[in-house]
Length: 282
Image (tube, rainbow, N blue to C red):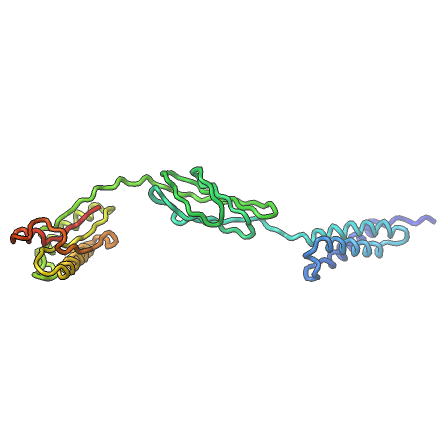
């Protein structure tokens, strides 16, 4: 009597045995997963043995070959590392400013071995960290392309805004004629305090300017004493302006002592002109 071919159910069982057996041999933790050739070989052997055992009679050879093929495939898939998509994050500090504008660009990517930058104005660079100067105003899209040794790639970009520089205003000087101090002191008189109101209003009307508060003295006394007094008086005026609402970051204070006279120190009137506080606005 002629032997019947395995049923569909039996064929499915053979395939299942091949897959399960070969997959068990290359499961994580067996020590073989790191070598694809060993994984495929073990999978083929295990799949062939498992399929032969599930088949019967003369069909064992044929099903054994099928099992070997299935086992090798499972071994290959089990050993192949599961790799996600390559990704990259990009940042810049600062993101914008007046031309010429310098910024530091950074790219972070796990696994990438190459970082190529297109900086938006025709410039190029390489590396994870790039310091670059934009010479002209405009909106630029800095783009980094990363790649790894297996050919995966990822792209990220960031916008850089470079502004037209403001025209530099010519420095102007405001001499605070009515700002007086008590004799030999940095304490403002009452009249001197009142005189600062107008200066504060003028500075508040142009909040983009910066101001150097410079103190001066006449030549009476030692050079060192005059320098220290002029510095103290400049600081006193700066503090009074801050009290009136002027941003302290706009104001600096320094003293020139008797080194920059406006008039002759030989007359009382000349010495009075030299005892002054000056606002240099720029």
